[in-house]
Image (cartoon, rainbow, N blue to C red; front, side):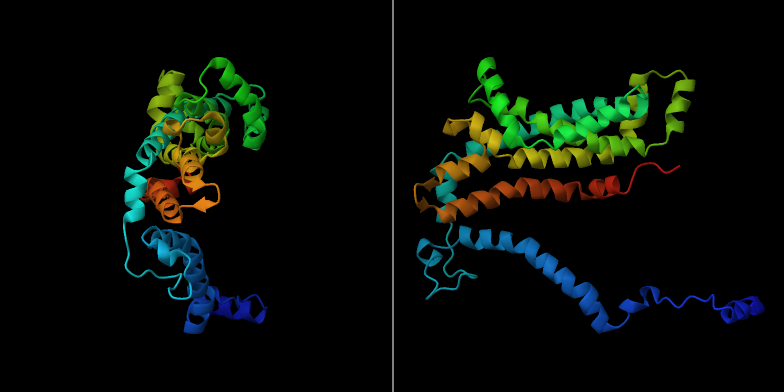
Length: 300
C-alpha cells in the first residue's frame, strides 16, 4: 500500500487541496464565516428592530434627532399600539387577512395537488407542455391580471367582499403551488406507485395513501409560500375592497393610517410589526418540514 502511495506522489497525482482546513485559523473564520453571517443577520433583523422601537417611541422623539437618538428609545410608550387596536379597525383587518389567507391557501393547495399529480404521475400526452404553461401563468404580473379580474368580480357581484379576494388569490397561488409540488412529486420513486397499482389500488387510493403522506413536507412548504403571498398581497385587496371593515392588513394600514400628508408612524410601525408576527410564527413551527422539502422526498 505504501508503495502505491509513493508511486502516486512521484507521478504527480497527489491532492494538494486544503479542504475544510482553510477555516481552521481564526482570521480566516472571521472573514469567511463570522463577518458575512453578521452582515446577513443585521440586514435581516434591522427592519424588525426599527419597527419595534418606532412602535414604542413617543411622538416627540420620532423626528427630534438632535435631542434623541433615532436608534434607541427613551421613555417607551404603548400609546401607538393602544391607538391601533382600540381606535382603528385593525383587529377586523387582521381577521379578514387571516380568513382570506387560510381559505385561499386551502383552495390553492387542493387544486394544485390534483394538477401536479396529473402532470407528473399520470403521464398523459402534453403533460410537460401543460406544466410549462402553468409556470408561465405564474410569471404574469398581477398588475396586468387585476384589470380583467375586476370586470369579472363586478359581473359576479362579489365586489367589496372577502369572497372576492378568496376567489381571485388562487389565480396566482395555484400556478406557483402546482409548479412547486410538481418538483416534489417528481422526487417520489415511481416504484411505490407501480407496486400499489399491482396490488389493485386505484388512482385515488394511491394519491391519498401513498403520495400525499410522503409529500407532507412539500405540501407544508407550498402552503407556507401560498399563505405568505396571500397575506402580503396588496394590489387585488386594494382594487376589490373599498369599505374599511373588509380591508386586509396591508391595505388598511396604508390607507387608513395615512391621512394626506400626515403619517401615523407609530401606528404604522405597530401595524406592520403585529401583521408580520403570524407569518413568523408559522415559519418557526414548520421550519423543519420546509427544510426537508428543499432536500427532496423519498430516496431510492
